[in-house]
Image 1: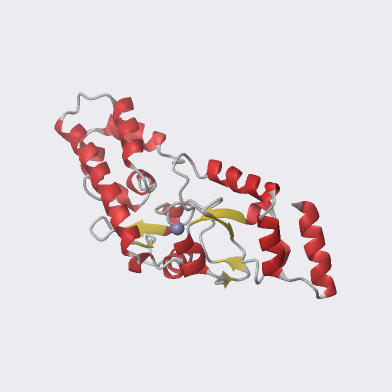
Image 2: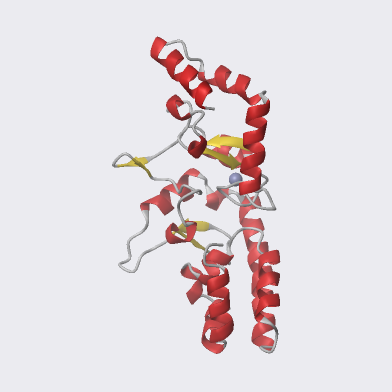
Amino acid sequence: MEERQKRADADMAAGTLNIEKTWKNARQTDKLAMVKRQLQQMAGGRQRCMYCSDSAGTDIEHFWPKSVYPEQMFRWPNLLLCCTGCGRDCKGSQFPLVNGNPALLDPTVDDPWDFLDFSPATGILFARMDSKGSTSIKGSETARVFQFAKRDAVTLGYRRSFRRISKIIQTILDDPAGHAAAFISDLKDADEHGILGWCFRGAGVNESPMSSLRQNHPAVWSACVSAFKNY
Ligand SMILES: [Zn+2]
């Protein structure tokens, strides 16, 4: 990768770099196939897109778009796994900046639930409001660029995941004698979209049925909060 980046940098300096062709040629190699496998492993068992967590991650994505920042084309920290909908249809070469810093969530660094909120009724991800009532720029830019409100398949998937999570939480509310460990494992199985972070540390802590669990079963609640701290 380093070698390839050096060659690309030299071509760029000479004014002869063909970004698309260079990337396309590299994608045919075993090394890049290895990079994709590595990213798939990082994306967890479901190998989903790192932006929407809904569709399968099929493409190697450049967080800093290679068409604008070819000096990042072969840099490992710039590579993510994403779906066609997020990468090609939505993001393309869009990359909003604020004071030179990315205004999009970086899935390798940021906790999405610091910046995003979720509506269980619509399945839409949108910018989180802070305690002073201002909206997170990173959250709103991410929701805008990835068009979360307009992608029916994505919102449907999120609604389904949340319904399954709600049902499991309801079982503990109905029968608090159940084991917290089994409960936590059921929740992980049900959560295909990474919403447990929203439920147990994001804005979801104040929503039903999480708020009932927190008030009525504080021990189970604490076990969940610690289980889903980095989830
Ligand atoms: Zn996606």
